[in-house]
Amino acid sequence: GRTVVCLDESGFMLQPTVRRTWAPRGETPVLDCWDRRDRLSVISAITVSPRRKRLGLYFDIFDHNIVTDDFETFVASLLQRLGRPIILVMDRWPVHRSGAGRLQERFGRRVCVEWLPAYAPELNPDEQVWNHTKYTDLANFIPNDTLHLGQSVAKSIRGIQTNQNLLRSFFQHAKLNL
Image (cartoon, rainbow, N blue to C red; front, side):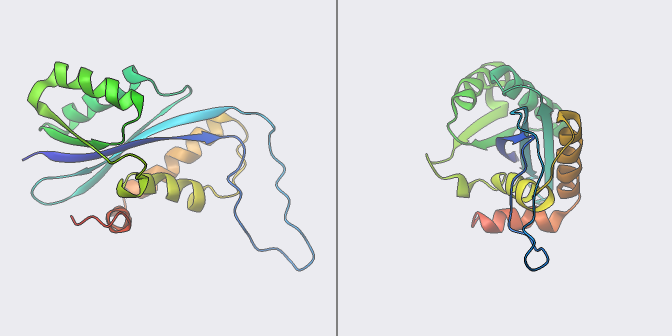
């Protein structure tokens, strides 16, 4: 059988993702933050094993915008780690489209690509990795610099990696049965 791989990318900035919070009556909470636009790009993939339906989460962090070479390298390393053919489920972002062609040339039948419908991010369970990281773990978080931001993003995603129930909830949110 093939391992299903749901893949997506997101960006994280030094500026906080501001969420509503509690404060004493009459005291407006203030977030003192950077006015810099430094950012990190993160790619992740949720994997579903063919028989036992065991879930995995893999990721990589970049200090630049993700390009086709980064995407191809990430998927190639996943193929090596998983040791079996994959069904790659993703949106039609240009990096994915160009990378899919390269991957199929390089790995042939070991990579089967399934495209999500246009403008339907709610169908990709991997989108919930970003939702959880940005709006739960790192809400109102103000990093010192991109190193601190990267460490915090990695810590959040590692917490998701070890939580099968949380990963399963991402599929429930996408209304997908495992």
